[in-house]
Length: 353
Image (cartoon, rainbow, N blue to C red; front, top):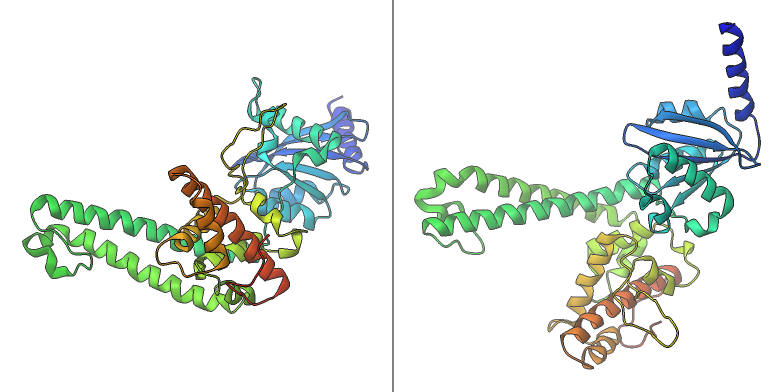
């Protein structure tokens, strides 16, 4: 009896794998992922857990007929989506902002989430607002930019700690500190001082690597000619978007990066709301920094600066903040347009969207 039961289970397992029109929901976990398989009729064919490793996923899905697989964006979603597509499946990486039905559910579990993803993918895939991940090569190159940023942040924290500790003991350190400035407290502060120096050396190494990386992406040199755009902003922009042609209009880039205002119009009410803050937070912060330079006292005269200053002159501090965000959005649109059209930047003659 036991052998016949195992035979029926094995036969059922083979049957759903060879069935066409399947929709599969995967709730990705750090160690294991829940899988729910729906047939073309919407009925559950199979539910299981699989380890979130490349060999385990390849073994599990290489034997399945090409299917629609729905996963939620997260740490593992870039490489998992690339793996599943390589196996011949169609993959939708769902935007978590469209999945409140899952994140705010009062009966949430990995098994239930996988079922919900499969049902949403089968019934209304367009409403999931699919996320397009960058290529593996672009992601690896972007990792260098972000690693440098983390080192700069760590150096800043250690540097401020060094200055604060030294000040509490007497000496006020100058901006450019040398070992001798630590005076008689140097032996106590040497490890902290050396950590700052090592981070500075590491940042210098990354700067040299990023200079070489520019040669790989010709658009970076063109974008760096824009006022307020340096190597870090240009490289991050190109590597984050990865494929400029994915946007039909340059205006869409501002919305993609969360730089457009939210909209909740109702009847005659049209309240002013903050920006959506969707998309890549790091790139958005860099564009804000670029906009602040453009509108700052050292920013040269350009069309973008004139437009931003006219917005800032319409009110107080709130108007200035709105102007910075608006200039950041225009900056993103301008960068994309130059990238796609391969035109040279003309600071006082180019029309802006």
